[in-house]
Amino acid sequence: MALSIGQAAPDFTLTSHMEQTVRLSDYRGKNVVLAFFPLAWTPV
Image (cartoon, rainbow, N blue to C red; front, side, top):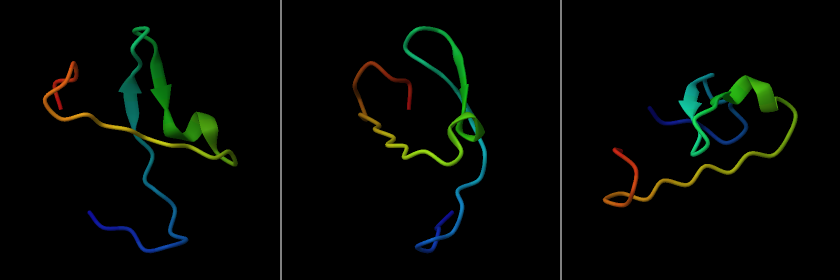
């Protein structure tokens, strides 16, 4: 799914490296950076 500049990202939930559930909506109003490392320690 492609987003346009200024468009809100859909809410989602991920498990952190500390096994805690984190929701994007928990950080509403704050800057968020997501980093994915293909073929690293993540199953992504």
